Amino acid sequence: MLEKLKTYRSIRKYEEKPVDDEVLKTLLGAALLAPSSRGLRSWEFVVVTDPDLKNKLSKAKIGGGGFLKDAPVVVVVMADPAVSDVWVEDCSIAAYTIQLCARDQGLGSCWAQIRLRKDGDGVDAEENVRQILQIPAKYSVDSIIAIGHPAEEKDPYTQTDMDWTKIHYNSY
Ligand SMILES: Cc1cc2nc3c(=O)[nH]c(=O)nc-3n(C[C@H](O)[C@H](O)[C@H](O)COP(=O)(O)O)c2cc1C
Image: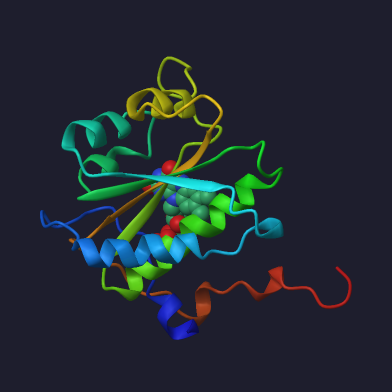
């Protein structure tokens, strides 16, 4: 597992090739089994393949989301905070489950942060995403995961990337 994780880098460039429907279903199925606080499964997901919508999503926040328009599919990860007070944690685990599963299927992925981000006019990125995808106001948007066949290679991490000074035993 650790050896695999060393190669799991964020991929922001993708081949112009769709993600197989069955493979996508595998990733989404994994997300639906992700651990969640009290098993409440507060998350919901919007799968986007439409080029115009992806282009709009790539501009929902200032900086760091441009790659969303280039991915064959992106998954918006959101939740109703009324369902769980720790919906952010629920969404984060589900989002990373999608990323891990994507890599396991030979795909690349990258997280685009939406929660707490703004666009160039100071408008909340969450509000932009809700508008673009007609998401009801009660949902908060955590992140968008871009998925596709990798068109870039990145060096795997090595032992030297592990900062063991961050690990503390029994007391700080
Ligand atoms: C909570 C979170 C938010 C992130 N937001 C963005 C983002 O908005 N745009 C982006 O390009 N990458 C984003 N990333 C990816 C990180 O930039 C990336 O994981 C980090 O630079 C380490 O690179 P690696 O994933 O290749 O190891 C995010 C990752 C996490 C976990």
